[in-house]
Image 1: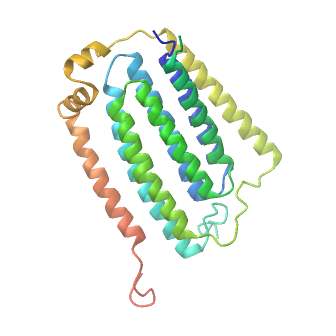
Image 2 (image 1 turned 135 degrees about the vertical axis):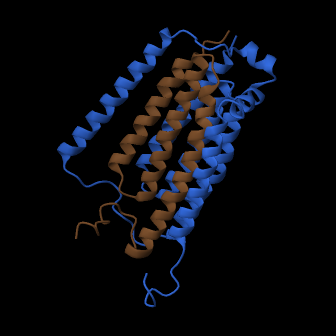
Image 3 (image 1 turned 90 degrees about the vertical axis):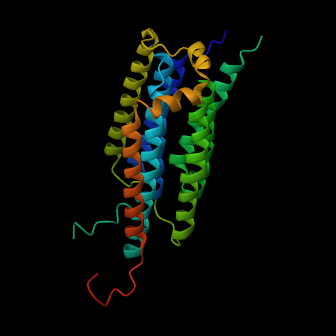
Length: 102
Length: 181
């Protein structure tokens, strides 16, 4: 019998979520900020699977499938937005994107 | 006797945490992207350890196969010639406050995770029941196409909306001077 328990996965998932949140706060490059959003979504996915393992249910796996779809759509639209921004402003620095402020 | 699942869990979680730290601390976005690939692969290993085989396969297919290729392509297309000062140049007190806030948040989440040790199973999908139903993939597919079929159909609308939005965003204007743009 293995000593591996699902709550260990939960700890890892929440640490990854926190790292993604920290990256979203400290970075300025829009591409890396999108990557941090992907990290946060992955952390949530891992906790979905761990909770469905704890609860002996398969609904968490289905939630992960839907979250993956949303993540794919989100990254496609987000990268499209980054390309459109780069085309007009020639930058991906989130601090220099302030056309609404001027 | 070596506890192989625990060993694999230690390896995968170490790679995942170190890789995600590299994602947020590397200056070059390409290095961040490749660290993210390592994180996604180790997540697939963690899913496989929890016998979520379908999710593990989809993790590799969708994340490392589709999303990361998209990211690397966009990094290549943008080709930032001048290096950006990539970390927020905010005051020290803001950095300190955000660090304290994030670490407190993570601490609270980990406490919640430790509370999960006392949870009792509520469903009936034990390992034996799943293998009796014909395996993880078959059980998920039957649930997906019977109980959750409405969500599945809504997902197709979501993908359609994403396709339309991406094309509308990425389409190059032919001549911005002519007509209204």
